[in-house]
Length: 130
Ligand code: HEC
Image 1 (tube, rainbow, N blue to C red):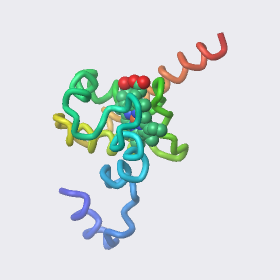
Image 2 (spheres, rainbow, N blue to C red; image 1 turned 90 degrees about the vertical axis):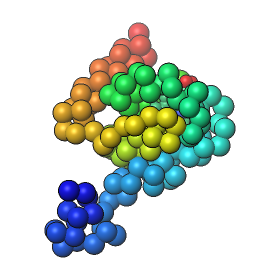
Image 3 (cartoon, rainbow, N blue to C red; image 1 turned 135 degrees about the vertical axis):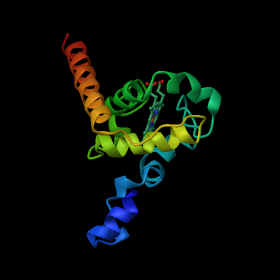
Image 4 (cartoon, helix red, strand yellow; image 1 turned 60 degrees about the horizontal axis):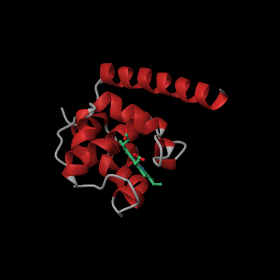
């Protein structure tokens, strides 16, 4: 069942669906300023050549690493309250416009992402401290 049908059944309106439910919305609000405007080194939406090697890293790894931040890529796209779910949806939007075919992560995949995020944060912290 799609999310809209679930909302209708639950008796709530589409307008109350949280913004993160739309990967495209999050992309436009948070990511497009860099990933849609030739920000130096940021892989651009729709550029299959730039995205292919990233897509090959896999959804869990790429989502987790992007969320934690890597080089010029700010953690959470620079929006401190962005959830992992919302980040994953925004990334799916970019990937799916750029030659990939990723889906909304299920519970198991999200768990794997969270584990990878924790691992990555730990190694970042130890580097900063060391
Ligand atoms: C301030 C600019 C900026 C914003 C905002 C931003 N990014 Fe990025 N992003 C970058 C840059 C620059 C890189 C390239 C990093 C590098 O390889 O040096 C990057 C790389 C990435 C990568 C590849 C990471 C890797 O492992 O190589 C992902 C995934 C990504 N961004 C996702 C997102 C998502 C999703 C959002 C929005 C929620 C977002 N970015 C918002 C600048 C930005």
